[in-house]
Image 1: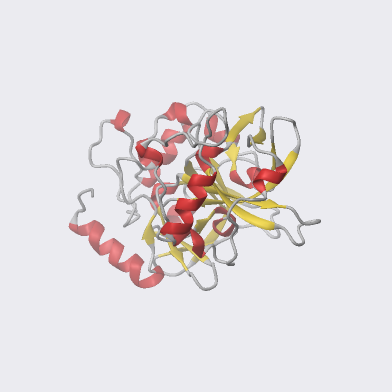
Image 2 (image 1 turned 120 degrees about the horizontal axis):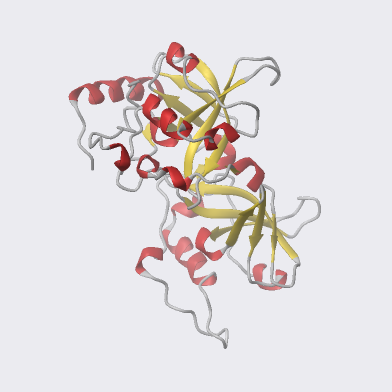
Length: 302
């Protein structure tokens, strides 16, 4: 666990009192603050990935991608698929380990593949709860990982999984669909915007949240890219609601670098992503600053 300065502790206490927030990058070593500028080579919107068709090798649509379950560091742990039913009615919901899917982003479009027939997928363990509490159950998660393990040619024996892919439960179900659209509040409990989208890097890890502010019904709205590591999340297990917090004043957000339009392509301009990171205090190894960011406190450093 990374070192915290006394001032960062004080900031975190304030944020915890107001939002009871949980730092989204508790381990800096694996968090998005350590990414390289080359990791963001395209604009990969999570909103565009949700509702994508899941297709098998026979080019048959076997499911729809409904949601993503994230780790606090922004890594995608599971994709929630809808299977069966008619127009979404009567469908079953499945949690598929992210590594079991072949996901590609080509020329601005998502392609999601799963090497399985529709009939075989129908035998997978299903989610019965509204809040996906099954993902906190070790036994259920182990069944899911066993079901989606790669199989040998005879399809009767599973290929052993690497230790890095051992079944893992989640301490809290951070759903991308609930984060998108959530209100952003600062330590003064002010409404300072809304999460419009999440952006993934080439490793399919969340690196930025796009915050919309101002405007009326989306008209005249400004978009601020905020590093994922600078946000805090409060998850309500009963209602599935997620509150997103940031330790930044309204003025700081108003003066933050903006991206133009809803394509967010400004982030791909040379040096712009680094400018955003520096503004919010999310440092990278290539910047030669060993201090780094403190995602739990959301330190308000220019």
